[in-house]
Amino acid sequence: MRKNYVLTLVCSCLLAWALNAQPVYERHTYEVYNYLARMAQKGLIVFNDLTRPLSRDYIKSCLDSLSSKDGLLSVVEKKELSFYQREYTEGARKRAFNAAKDGFTLQADPIITGSYTTGTNTGFDGRSVGLNFWGRAGKQWGYQFSFQDFNLQGRGLDTTGGKTLETGASTGMAMQYAFMKNKINYTELRGHISYSFKNGSISVGQDYLLWGYGETGRLVLSDKAPVYPYLRLDYQPLPWLRFNYTHAWLRSNVIDSSGSYPYPGGVFTGIREVEVSKYMASHSLDITLAKGLNFAFGESIIYNDKLQAGYLIPILFFKAVDNANNTDAIEKGSNGQFFFQINSRNQIKNTHLYGTLFIDEISLGGIFNKQKQRNQLGYTLGGTITDIGLPYLTIGMEYTRVRPFVYRNFLPAQNYTHQGYLLGDWMGSNADRVSLLARYTPLPRLKLQARYTHI
Figure 1 (tube, rainbow, N blue to C red):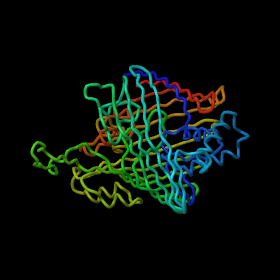
Figure 2: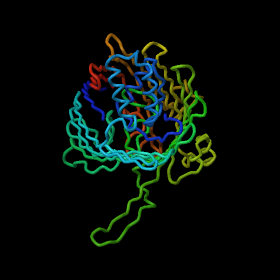
Figure 3: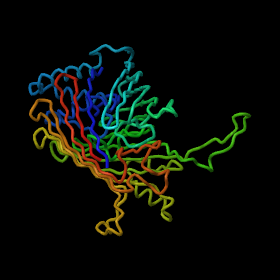
Figure 4: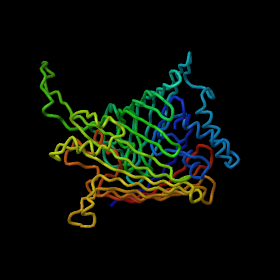
């Protein structure tokens, strides 16, 4: 059992995607997500953020929708809205670099960040520098590339893929100081090329992919694992129905002894190590049941050894594909999951309620038999209420439980991980967590947050 007290002070001066717009995805951690989610929680806009990241065009459309209701906003909220509208309106503010010709645009800004995190057995600072490029080519193509170099130092760092809320060391780790366990340096590379069509978009890229809701973790897909390459399809065939599909290339961290081979070369003779190939396919449906009430469900599958065409077809039932391909032995099969999400905003005034269920394995026949149970599942229940006592004060509570063996597979190459980090909740299996939080914004873009977590 462990108790954590975390106090974070953030002072941020932050420098769907629309029809026939070029989808350029915005980093999932930017404060504009929290701003729009809170506006949806107050019932002022509709904000579909089940999957992240979202495109700059969709974010702008939500901001434009909110501007028509600025009479309902506080002074602080109006100033933040004005700031975000300048940021997400093309040409409204100066960039470090800006070029345009014949339908092609290129914009760039530097990235400079600093932070300090403190809590029980934790105290470290983080710094990063980098560049972010984005733009469009014609009416339907968009692109983005981001390079960011991180340096972290202090107590409580996640240097081994361990269990902390903070994002793990990302793609292109440059140095993890062997004799200094409190220092780490890594590089984050994000980018994509996207094509938009009526009611949807297709992209190929490398980024974090998030699915579901959670204040202190996400059960299905979180940003705990490093970025990974993917194909992504978003499609909204009806106003109340949204479909998402991704196929990702993961790292197994499992050496393929049959594929590895020796190489000659004088001083540098040795073994060329080859890892077992690892992939993930995932798809989901998000259904609007009523204003502010959404229900979503989906499935994912982790498989390895070779690319399988069936998982590249977005509308196929992946579990059925697995059964058809591997009918004679479980050892040949893949690792499948099912997940569900319920989400309510402003059905109770100024309140966001949500629940997530993640099923890694379940035996319906023995669900109530303790001797036969194989119910490997996790769930999250949570809620927040805003403008409670003070304008822009939000308080919340969240409970997460992950039963034993969730995210695990008898084949290590099919664990629910990438590069040794969990794809889902950072806490891992056989654990539960209760969290209390309070957030307050006394001045525009000055964010105060206190969080208590008991594990």
